[in-house]
Image (cartoon, rainbow, N blue to C red; front, side, top):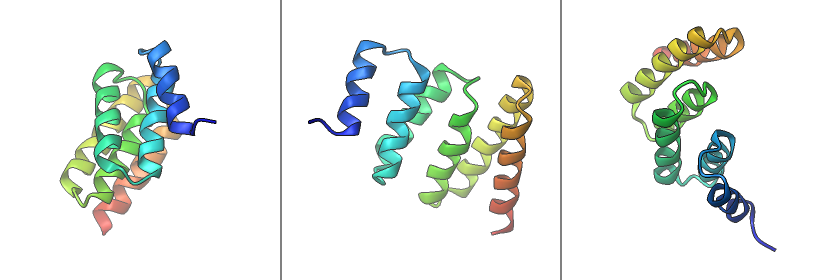
Length: 105
């Protein structure tokens, strides 16, 4: 039996433009603390699908884990703009709270 990451990578080969699959791959790398791969997958998704709002919260979290505070702030702010544009008030609130927490650290 294959592991979750292998299954997701196979799905990606079948549907390389599916945003959710790409997001799930990035999440899997993040869960494994493979921040290099997580960053690459999240960043590519952010570039290709800037309206996919969940990416911003998780990508900023990776930058926080890497102690790259300025980059995390930049991504949170970009996420706030994307959430506002999408009318996603829940994501906007989560991103705002995360950014505020980061700025208080």
